[in-house]
Image 1 (cartoon, helix red, strand yellow):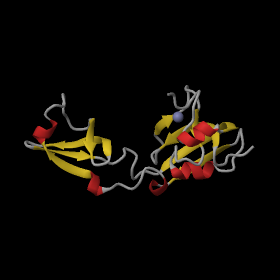
Image 2 (cartoon, helix red, strand yellow):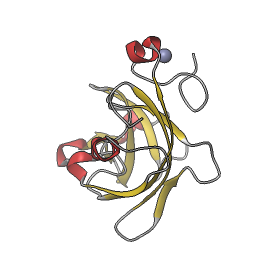
Image 3 (cartoon, helix red, strand yellow):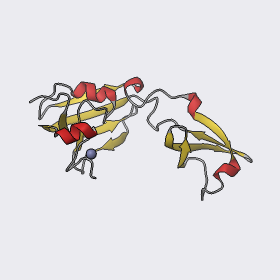
Image 4 (cartoon, rainbow, N blue to C red):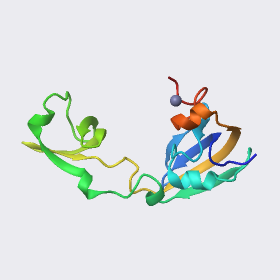
Length: 160
Ligand code: ZN
């Protein structure tokens, strides 16, 4: 059995950045379960998993374009400070959830001035090349319910 669209795949992975710092890992946790071919994971990694077998270990280098996107300066915005008056402990470096035209979004506060605040709505990993170390743990056919929902049910997956 090889990884193809509409298969549920479990992987162990470690994600490092260009400096070799570990950003995320399934180490010490359950493997990550995802539904292949449904954009559950970043495009570059999904592409590299295509055709792999159980037990295969490999490295996947994902460019920003096939990862979390390039940094977009249009996602950096300034708002009047009073709009954020309800947020306790407002300080530079923290992330907040706010309503935007794309729904609820995470913004990082990058600068606080007397009367205005600069927010960055880029994904924290935008603009970064991602280095995945991957080990394929299991592959099974998805149920029709999983395919219609576009995600995995059961252990490691989505719970309703
Ligand atoms: Zn579901």
